[in-house]
Image 1 (tube, rainbow, N blue to C red):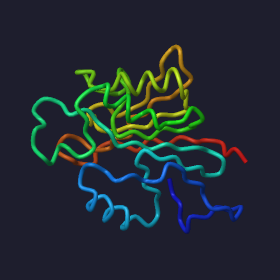
Image 2: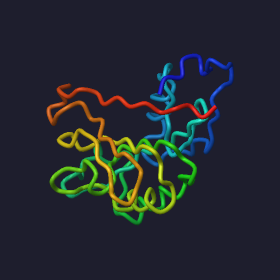
Image 3: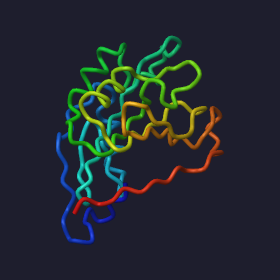
Amino acid sequence: VDSSNNAHADGDKHKSTNKKEENDFGGDMVRQCRACIKNAIYLEDETVEILGVKFYGTPWSLLRGGQNKDEYKAFCVADEEALKQKYKKMSYDIDVVISHYPAFRHNDGAARVGSTALLEKLRIDVQPNVCISGHVTESHGMTKQANMDTVFINATCNNEENEMCKKPILFYLQPKL
């Protein structure tokens, strides 16, 4: 999402809700990273409206076995119930969900590591047009689910070695002005 100058063609500034709460994981580092962002909007359990389209961003992932080093603990929770609590902040009127972690069975790898809590939140409460995720590098692509209109996109362009080797996925959303 490009927010150069934080203004749009119609002169209106974007609207942001759910002001940032202190992160349990490296609050100083998060503040420093946010200060460096100039041409994008950082969303951490927040909503931003741009040209009438509502975007919600969430960074949370499940802490899996073998990820015991401190470097893997930022924005991780222990179980699906904890993710469910995090997703309670997501309102029902979101058009695009941007989640680091994928929904269960949607570009979440052969091991099916995606979140059932995210899938249920989207299926029951939100029904966004698009859910964009990453995290699972082997599962680049798009999926749909029979009982939902949501398009699920894993936009990861890198592989396990962090080499950029996949083409970006582009999609279009009609402004709601």
